[in-house]
Amino acid sequence: MAKITFITRDNETIILEGTSGSVMQLAVDNGVPGIDGDCGGVCSCATCHVHVDVGHHLKTGEATEIETDMLELNDYANERSRLCCQIQISDAIDGIVLQVAESD
Image (cartoon, rainbow, N blue to C red; front, side):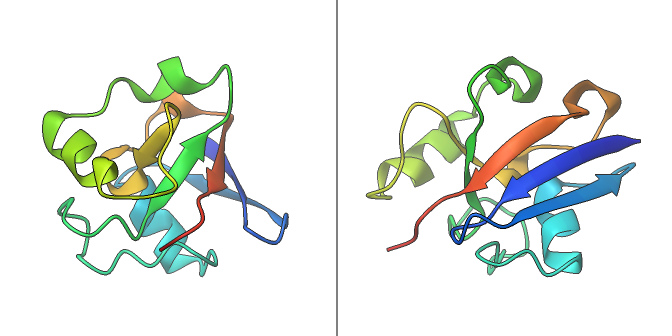
């Protein structure tokens, strides 16, 4: 079981728990504002863009080339950006904090 904290664009804190699947699907299933997942999690839309909290980046691993290419098109991307459709829920990400990114 992994506990994941989302900080919305309105600075609301939403804490969710999951055991499997993508972080995006967990967010969509629980109505986290700003995580739309329009493409269904296939890394082609960036509507699940988050910024990984400082110190938690190692928990998510590195972004794939496809993910990096998608993020390059986003004006709000930075060195802590990830698409949460590409982050799988596991014990390794327990305690992670994700800030929902601004959107274009």
